[in-house]
Each structure stands twice: as structure tokens, then as C-alpha cells.
Image (spheres, rainbow, N blue to C red):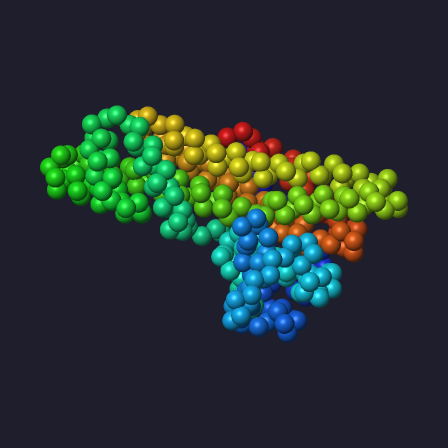
Length: 325
């Protein structure tokens, strides 16, 4: 069964979104003057926190995104508050967010970019490890050449040229092997890139659980249908994160488990299928995950929380998104 069009399926509205300014906006144009200093920036810390950096003084302030608005004196639900809550999602797509930077196009619903160089580097490194287990004579000669070349996007072409120069393999044979491995490396790099650009699922899960705790603490909401819906959403909110990780592991296992590269084309197609599934998963969840991150459990309008719960449950009904790899 084919998936519906993600752009038309169950549209997600961010808390506080208005008709005058669709969300996310084009840029991180904060209103507060202390957040518009060009020497400021946001980075992701080693444990996933937001790191608030003032570059000229080398000051680094580590902030929990759920309480960062208090440290920066931003009112919950304000435009600056909602921009701040977009930053963890943006930092999954870029290294640094500075004031006035454009919001990453992928976060605004545009197609994901091609793999970056570090994804290609990681893919070629993994492929070289798999190639070491291939016992064919062509692979052994090719592997001997690869050991003398630094990993990188062009390493297979350089190894092919070295094999021909040394006279150990015929040009046609080694060129065919190099092209196949190059395609496979790029296919696996696409999987790694699609996984790296998945939405901030962990942030969404934390906010669903935080909202559930607040509702259950409030006697007026604990027995309400909304309280029941959020309670049910808590364990289900982990499904997209677990699915994305399972797809990444499947791609790596299929590459690492090869003892022969006689059927590279089948491997390339399988990597492409896993990459497409990760892209579909991200398309259906990116806007919703970022919208949940914009919730303030104490003050967000309960009708908006109810709509986000409905969005979450409806997306989980798209069973083909979460089928085992």
C-alpha cells in the first residue's frame, strides 16, 4: 500500500502559529536584542544539549532546551520562545545556528540535501572493512591498493588506477569493480545522511512525557480524554526513533555482512530502499517533532496539545512506515 502525500496528510500546526506568519519562519530573527548579537551562536553539546556561545569572550553556556527560555528571559509561548525551541531541530541539519541565519530548508519542508563529505568518508571506511573479508583475487589486489590510499570519496578510483599502473589487473575488470564500489559507497552514504537528518525524536518524546506529567498532576485534566490521550502517546512516541535506528542498523549490517561483492547492484538497490524509507519517515515526522518541541507543558493551549496528540496517533497508523527492515 502506497503512502499518502506527506504534504497533504493531516497538516500540523505549531503551538501559537498564526495565519499571518506560517511556522517555521524563514530565519532565526529574534526580537530580543540580546539574542541578535552577531557574536552569539547555538551549537549542540556532546549530550545533545543546546550550547549558547558568545564567541568574542569564549563563553559557553550549556542550556537544557526545556528550561532555556527562563535563563534567557523569554516568555513561554512568545515568538522568541518558539524560535528557541526550533534550534535543536535545526542543529540536526547544520553545525551552528547564529542570529539571523536562515532556517534550514529541510526543516521548512524542502527535499533533503545530498550526502555531505563526512557521510561519504564514513561509508567508504565501512565498505573497506567489508572488502577486507572478500577473498576473491580481484578484491585482494584492489584491497592492497586501497591500503595505500587515505579514505575518501575518490579512493576507489585512485585504487583502480594504481592496480592498472602496477599491472596486477586488467583495466576493464578493475574499472568495473571500482565503479560498483563507488556506487555502493554513495548509496550507503545516502543512508547515513538520511539517518543523520531525521527529526529530533528524542526531544519530541521528552516533551510528550513532560506534558503528560503536568496533565496528570492537574486534577482538572488527569481524568479527561486529553489526559488519557497523552498517557497513551507516551510509549508510542518512541516508535519513529526506534524505526529510524533499526533501518540504519539494517543498512550497516547488510554492508558489513557481505563476504563477496559479486552482486553489488543488489546491495546498491537495498541501500536505496532503506534510504527511501528513512526519507519517508523524516517527511512524515519532521514537522510534528518540531511542533511538539514548541510545547510549554504549563501554558500551551490544551486544544493545541490535543491536536498534536491526534497528529501523533494518526501518523502511527501508517503501518508501512514502521515495518521491520
